[in-house]
Each structure stands twice: as C-alpha cells, then as structure tokens.
Image (cartoon, rainbow, N blue to C red; front, side, top):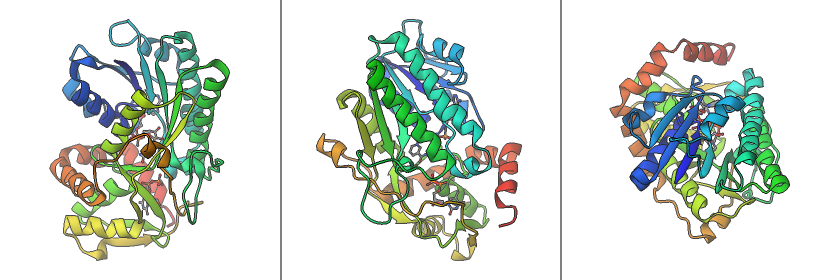
Length: 342
Ligand code: NAD
Ligand code: TYD
C-alpha cells in the first residue's frame, strides 16, 4: 500500500509510520509530509531515511504545491491512502495564539481534500485524524459518534472544523473519507509539553509538576500503539463517510496519573505544584467505543504496563527530550508565557 502520512515527524504520526513499516515491511511505501513546526522532529524516523520505500518532504499541508507533490508518492506513482495527522495540537498554545490552529487544522485539511478530489477514484481512503475534544466536556456518561459537537477551546474548535470539512467532502464529492476521534494518547516520542511526558521529564530532573486547578479533570488515556493499530484496522475495515471513536478505556483524574508518575520515577509528592487552572478547562472527556469494538477491534495494552513502558522510554532516551527542553528557545518562550502570573 502507498501511504501519504502528514505530520509524520510528530508524536502519533511518527509512531504510525513505524507501525506501518514494522507490520508491512517493504509492502508499505510512505511519503511523510511535515512542516517541521516546533513539534516536528525529522530525526524521529531517522532509521528509515534513505530507504527506497520512505520519502520525507518538508512542507505545509496548507500549501497546495507541497500537497500536490506529496500526492505523487514515493516514486511518482501516487498514493492509495492519506492519513492526516498534521495539526497544531496543544490546547495551551491555542489559548495564546489561535490563528495557526485555524490555518493548519481547518484550512490545511481543505487543501488536502481539494487535492484528494483530483485523485479520486484511485484514492482508497482519506483518514482525517480528529479528536474526542470536539465533543466537549461530559460530566457523566460517554459520547458516541452521533452526539453533537460542542468544542470549548480554540484547539478543539479548529479540529471540529477540519473534522466536518472532511465529512462534507465525503458527502459532496464522494471522497472515501473516514473520520477518527481518539482520546488522549501517550507513549514514546510525545513532545514534552503534554501532561505525561512533561511530568515524567520534570520529575526526573527534580522539577515541579504544575498540576492545573484541583487536579481532578478526567482524561481517557490511549496508548499510542493501540491508536495506530486502530487506524490501520479502519483503513482495512472501516466504511467511507463514517466516524469512529477510538478510546483507551482508561479514565483517570490528572492527580491519579501524577501519583503514578511519581511512583514510577521514584520521586516525592512534594514535587506536585498546584497552579491556577487552564482557561475553559474541559472537566472530563469520555468516549463510547462500542462501534469500533463491535467490528472486532480490541486494544492490546493495559494502562499500567503502557505507562511503565513509556516512563522507561523517557529514562532510556534522555538525549531526545533534553535536546528539546534545553536547546529550544521556542520551548522556553512558551513556558515563560504560559506560567506568567500563575
Ligand atoms: P504533534 O504536535 O506531536 O505533531 C504534529 C505534527 O504535525 C508535527 O510533526 C508538526 O510539525 C506537523 N505539522 C503541524 N502543522 C503542520 C502543517 N501546517 N503542515 C504539515 N505538518 C504540520 O501532534 P500529535 O499529538 O502527534 O497529534 C497528531 C494528530 O492526532 C493531530 O491531528 C491531533 O489533533 C490528533 N490527536 C492527538 C491526540 C493526542 O493525545 N496527542 C489525541 C487525539 C487526536
Ligand atoms: P494535555 O496533555 O495538554 O492534553 P489535553 O489538554 O489535550 O487533554 O493535558 C492533559 C490534562 O492535564 C488536562 O486536563 C490539562 C492537565 N495538565 C496539567 O494539569 N498540567 C500541565 O502542565 C499540562 C500540560 C496539562
């Protein structure tokens, strides 16, 4: 199969490309189109550079010329499947500057879809990677795919725009679109500004863990390899125009995760630093994943073993995250702004 993966230098995208090569070997051809924003790290997939079935293209999904080139595939013969991971992804950043979120997460999706129209009917699938955050917060019960969208921050609003634009292109032009809405991912190669990698790496350095608000917000945690397996499963078994929730089945309060991280890193609770709450902080995300399960898909990893494996990865790959945390002026500027006045 010939894949165009966008955002393949980021956390989930790079795990997905690795998943494809591990599972399909040389039967998978992958073009990775990535802008290399602060979150894109080309070296995440360094082991595949130079292989005849892998091509890295630096470019913006909102740039029609870059997208046209990416659809040519590894060898100019085209692609069968597009998986769009490329996005601005951090809620806290969207509270400081929402414009780039609209540009990438909405307009970028439109450019990818417009190019897809030129390649129909040879295109087999266009997977739009959306998020559970488009449903908004839920105090009890779980969201199913037919529930209305109620995004409550600029990140989730922009993702909802891309999500529905992809659906609209399926309805209007008959494109083979599938939309996936996954819950919070964790695992190796996650940029250390998101909760789990930030707290693991801060704890390793005896730095404080900034827990927002009362620490009782709930997220459903999905191990990244299970997410990759679900996307691969849907490429094979999904139905065009359908939306699928992909959940971990691991709902935990942030303070519970924090305690587990301190246990796994052998650090004291005194590192926890309650800070002011995030503006518009969604209280709880929860997904009903019956639709995917009924198709026969099952996650492989339980939460505790996946978290342990993840913490071990950060312990064994200090050079990777230290390079980001210590040398990136951009990273420092974000944190200075983020915690000013808290
Ligand atoms: P990430 O921030 O780690 O990576 C995003 C990647 O996209 C980076 O490599 C970045 O360089 C690239 N990118 C950004 N703008 C681009 C543009 N305009 N053109 C091309 N490339 C661009 O993000 P992630 O956590 O790996 O998330 C991947 C996708 O999964 C996103 O669409 C996100 O909304 C979705 N998602 C993430 C989670 C999660 O918990 N991380 C959960 C559900 C859904
Ligand atoms: P995050 O990893 O940013 O993912 P999202 O906001 O997309 O769910 O945050 C996960 C949860 O952790 C969320 O409730 C906010 C909270 N959080 C903190 O308490 N402290 C932090 O420093 C960060 C980054 C997040």
